[in-house]
Length: 297
Image (cartoon, rainbow, N blue to C red; front, side):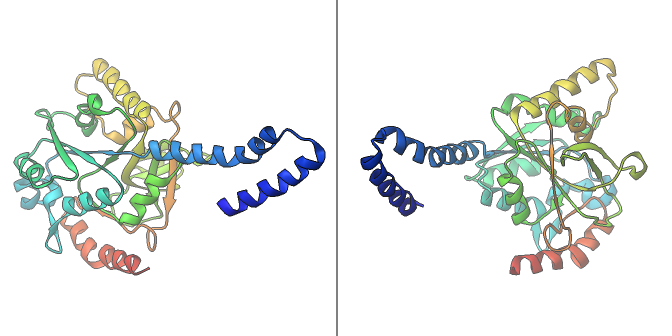
């Protein structure tokens, strides 16, 4: 690009000498689009999230004994806890700090935090994890958020390439989704004509289905704080409220549009959550082979 600009400047100066055009104004006009492009590029880079928030307080009773004795993030797939794979992906995406909000079997995350120098692993604890939904857990991080963040579940397996696509997406608020997974525990996504989120639900009869949520989001500080404020107001009206983060996001998506980044499950973003033994078996038989094929590309 530099050579092209230099050539254009020489051509422009030739005409300046013959047409008596102001050289400074002419060259500035020529370089202005490139300067604007550089500003946009720098602005985008500055908005890249450096903090990932992972709510990890819940008790994995649906997985049986393994989900009771340790957090779901520490279930091993091919000899590695799934949360370790997620941390590796987050580092590849430029994340410098990971905040786990713990509850059930928090000692596992306390040990994990001591194992990492980079990224920085911080912990918050939710003593009321069994009383409220995970929106309550997430709200404990509101004072830790000063910029855009990644928000993701602790019990999911996903390809690093999909995470990087989410991070690079120019929209300030982005939900990662895929075509049908047939996992049996889907969170369905409805979007509008502009590609923005309208609704999330596990009940397919409640919405016009576009795709399925992966459980990974990029959120601006403003959107995240709005989620927390909306939840706190709802909790005052109903002290027994159990709200999940999907409902918290939908509650503010009109004021803070959330772009739906949809990818193909089979060859762009094979993924799964591991909530049950059936999910684990499907991971081994279906999802991991697809991920290994994707890594070859």
